[in-house]
Length: 103
Image 1 (tube, rainbow, N blue to C red):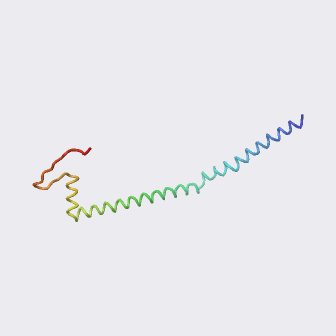
Image 2: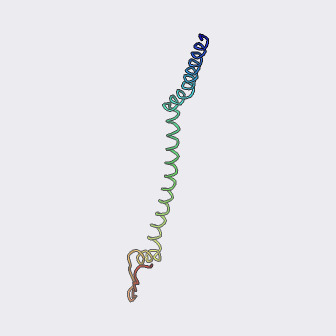
Image 3: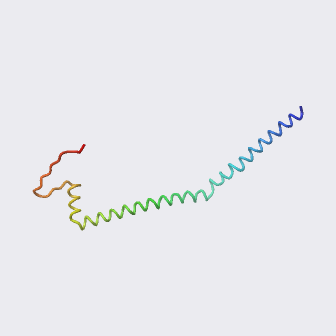
């Protein structure tokens, strides 16, 4: 009977040792990594890449708007089109028929 008790204690100690090793080699490195500068570096790299993408999109939008402004300054046809569509202007002598919203 004494041998069975001793064998049971060995299994408990082995189980505790396995849990301790799992925590040591699993959780502790992760915990240290999460607080390390490398994790912060990777986060900042992701943010930087997102900012670069956003800047490229905004740069393209600025270029499009600059082309539109230049066209409004130099091309009378573009200016007329904007006046007609956005402001509802008509030329003298024209009659505007408004049939309401399209369904």
